[in-house]
Length: 360
Length: 280
Image: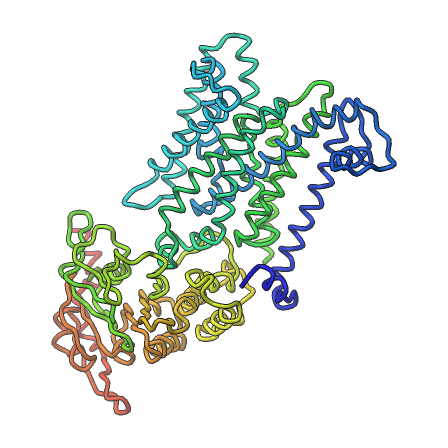
């Protein structure tokens, strides 16, 4: 059955959950578009929403009656637009990476930060900065690749540590992730110890996250890596559903389990590594997005994966607006914003769910 | 065409838990594996499902060694219900049964998928739960949902005529009386429909009532195999389970019915004796 047949044969009365999922994705998409226009308009140079739209469509050759000046156009196209695209790409990547790791490890606690992927990426990026590109001279591609390579090594280490007798053990996985985090913290600490004063300030960027480094030149290679990672994960939604039954059962359903694991790990390391290389460690997005999406529309990954991408992008976009405006003209690190808002919200969510469960 | 395991051996923790077991399941028959705890029943079923990585011996599915089939092709030909099926995330009952159609994606039409899912849910008596979150079901109800999933997986005969197989590991353990019989009657029906069915059971009377052949296992090996009437004798039950029984023929079916003699239950210490023994 093709997607068009499926859409035509869809009867909302027969499947209320599917209607709910479609509405949820629609609402998230509209919210994201509104957030984009808001994010593009807010800043030192104020741009009204109508002007934002006018500047954007002008590049498509459409002229509107709305007037804007060249400062506004320059601020929008050379500063805010790349920054916004980075927010969208890394938010969507973190959301999908979180949802995918939770599916792979069959544990709602898994997220890039908790299993050491982000720590590994930060190690790679920080080593690249302090040791001056390690003498490899790869230009704009070097940093994402350093972060990517280190995140892949960290993820592979966690996976190897948690594997016994051919299967992945959940409690060992968390311990293995803790060990990897301790290790990456130690490496980070050692590199910071070696760094000069001025380098330390630059390094703080990686630890706490910021979208301030977004330029068209910088985001092009990273966005390519993120698109590769996300593209691979999006194809795995049905195997992820089967994996919820357990690895052996997914195998009985014909899922090539070992290949799915490998592709997922590589794709997550690819996407999160590239994202972290440009933004630093942005916590909680990968953990919270899939949770909220599942609460609204259930656990089918054909819904959770796109939902987490939209919500992750929405969260990072709005968090960046807060980071830019709260202490303007200075900037808060975005990781501070996502964790400061994300953690209390998550507490509330857990309490709310517990109360719901009691009432049910 | 068959699912055939030859000389299957598995070691775990340095001990053999399956010793040179050979078993063939043919299309159209229901084979029950019975035996005491730790006899190797589940290990044999998992070996035939291709789950053991450290397996000695060969498993042949429809004329080709299991390891030479691709995973997706195996999934078209046989479904497996594990002893304790798990679910990592809150799925609806419908979504879980639909997972059984995973191997047939692109091979069947939307209507065929829908018919298989609704039919399988009806056969496992879970239709009224369709929209429920699986976490809100009881253990037995959840087990039936997973049974429906395996039925949906091998719902229709394959177009090329290859035989289908259904492997069920203690499907009745968590079920109430009526559903124990209902599930085995469905499994029987799957066999009559042309598939081969292998069931691990603890209840000898259920095995006697539903199986074409009974395979008795003890200490990792196959002790006896044959029709229920041939295998389930007082002498065999005494030697394998250490339980004295009386066996009568069911007048309607001619199949054996087994009654355990109270004085014949395995010689375990009573609670009082155990307490006295521990105090010494």
